[in-house]
Image 1 (spheres, rainbow, N blue to C red):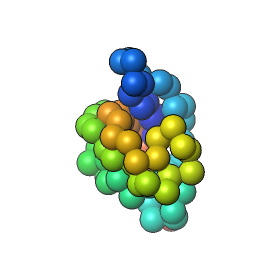
Image 2 (image 1 turned 135 degrees about the horizontal axis):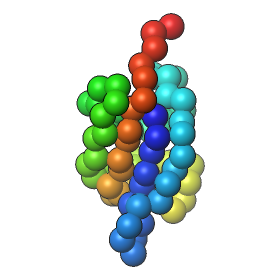
Image 3 (image 1 turned 30 degrees about the horizontal axis):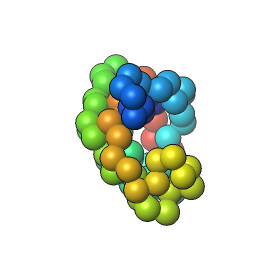
Image 4 (image 1 turned 120 degrees about the vertical axis):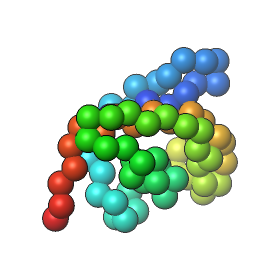
Length: 76
């Protein structure tokens, strides 16, 4: 999955490629939900609210537009 997050001044920050394992706790549940909306080869974008206790203080408690581009889906 390739992720982008909106900036306060506009535009999107490239979050890079992320291997996502749904339910492993690495990503906030709201991001996992966004990823689950997309099919391989598609992109989904919407505002998400980061949890107040999110480890990155610049995102904690804030609502940002997140874009997720899903490349492939694998099962364990």
